[in-house]
Amino acid sequence: MRTIAIDLDDTLNDFTETLRRLEFVRDGTFALAEPVFQDYLARVRLGEVAGGNLLSTEYTYFRQRIHQVCYQKALARPDGVAFLQGLRKDGWRIVICTQRDLRRAQSCTRQWLAENGIPFDHLFMAGNKIVFCKCWGIEFLVDNDEFNIIHGSRYGVTVFYPRTAASPTPAEGHSDDPCGPRPFHNFEEILPWIQG
Amino acid sequence: MDPRVTLLKEFYRGLPRDHAKLETNGHGFGFLDALLAGGAELEYGELTLSGLLHKYKLAHIPESRMDAFLHSHVEKDCNVCLYFDGSANQTFCFNLDNNNRENNREMLPEMETAVRLLRKNLGRHGCEPLVVASGRGYHVWGRLDGPVPNGRLYKFMLHAAVATVAEIHAQGQDHHRIKFNFYPDPRVQDVVSLRLFGSLHARNRVFSHILGPEGPLDESASWEYFATHLRTRAYPVASFDAALAGISTLDT
Image (cartoon, rainbow over all chains, first blue to last red; front, top):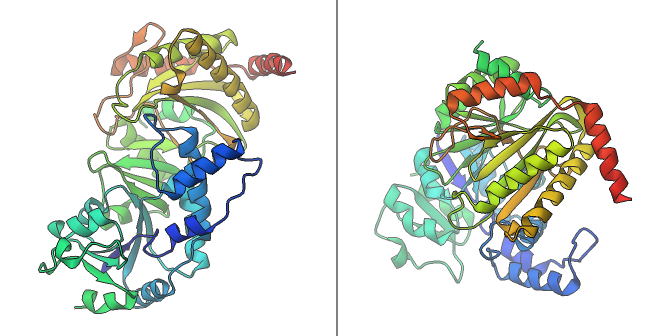
């Protein structure tokens, strides 16, 4: 069965835009003073991951809660939804492959996928999606992560990525390689590349 | 049935056995089809950063299939992790982890202090816990002779942990380096599972030995201690209720 893996955040949705756009209100469930709340929010919006030398802190918990809201509110790309619905009709196996912590985000992720009419077969979290695709014999990955864009072809995984101002140029991404990464503006551009 | 499986089923009695997380190096769509044979469903899978270790959260696991998984667990072919019941449980667990971002597999002095003090604080309430090595620290299990509502279990654990953290701090050590989690946690029902005793650590393949009051036990002694603990160390619900009533008096 032909299989494709696809990322969610900033690939199939507008996660970063949602993070910047949404207004977050400090309610009683955030046990933080207003200045701390605003400081943490600004850091989350800048993409700050770590909370210092410790794995689990007040900040990392806050970040996870804000992200959780964005997972629910992010807008799906209509061309991405149509692309996956078309693949499903053609008998493709679709694997959602994300770096989200699915222990906590599984339920809201499934709900978001259902609400947006996005078909899929399996839901996976993977810190290294190239290794995942290699292990599972998946040739095609749709993902915006620069590491995967640059390194996918070396391991036989063709990565299709939404072109943005920050995207690697084709030259950086092994453009001569038949497995090389390919940028796209619209998901339907991917179809001829995978149906060959 | 392997007597170790019988021991596990008895110790973890009350934890739902129709869903679980499995840790294994097995992967691929053929493997997944075999895993789901009999009607189990995959909620999600995970490729961890520990070699090729995969985790599979499964639901609707038939009883016979769970028995097979437990057998694989004691044979060290996979690790079985179970979730807590959503309303009441007969077991509860403190999960103590090294909270450092770097080198978080090393045994911190704070960890040894935390386990010693937590054991003492629980003992003060008549509870002798089972302390099992985990990846980044210890699981400190309490087992009751009957189920108790989750909210009461959480309150009891919170108080024991706060007392322990205060003593770590008073001894001049940094309690932030230890992360305390308590299960069942009413805030994250069906989110976190705990590895059963008898597992191998995913990364270093070291047996999850028991830390007895006198020190760590080897594999064979750990199983003997586990069986003895199961037979003789159930924490009476009446004692738990009395301890919690005392704690609640302090609250007011």
